[in-house]
Image (cartoon, rainbow, N blue to C red; front, side):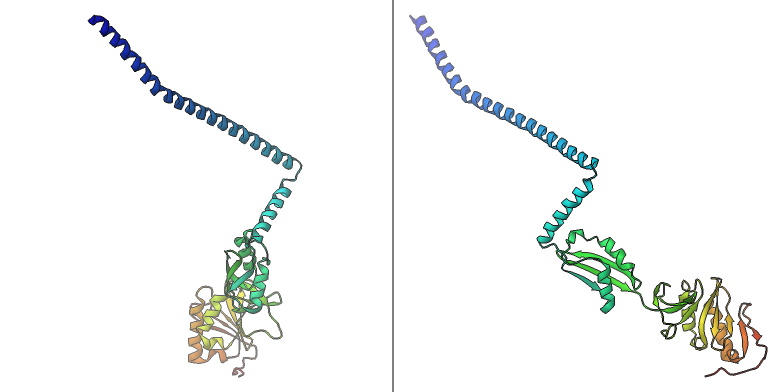
Length: 298
């Protein structure tokens, strides 16, 4: 009797264990099935996206190739760029003004015109480097800086050239700056009161002779102009018509020697055809045929 009861009790225990296992595993199987469905859906979507991208890329390159084949690619690109710039300009990114700093009046107006930037132009289409080059091409501008001031202004900061001397070459008289750059033509009948340099290469070395004369105003008062000889040295043309022949090298030292000689002996008052300083610190006078001593006219 006891054996039958134990057997019955074991069978009853196994049935209860099977029910619990089935109850626990059912949600797990459902969850695994759902995850498998999600992974499958993701895989199908990824494949579809790759295929779509490949198809779009193929169509894009096909269109580009066709446009290039028929020579219309540049036209289409320009059209798209124009539409984009028009849209951006309509959104407030259009040039409203060009601000010029460092110049005033007519010069500032010329600089603004040289930028070739117009009111209403998309600010994105303005190339600061190209604008800088156009502005610096003006004779009166030494340097320029250009920047876009968002959303609608262009700033141009310039350093203008200043008249430094007159340069006579091949019958033409021009105003130049200290770099020797021609700024404008000068009126031969009414030239500005500026130092005069003459001949080829004189403009490139103008600072040398002008500064040397400015340091010796006693000599500067006697000088009409400075003539460049062989692009190596200078001759000073005096009011009397005589030439002072300066040596190559230190112009300042040569003019200082001439100033000392004139202060001591008044040599520039002598009537001479030339005063030659090309020796070793010596002054050689070449007299005019008449050999007359005369005072310089006041």
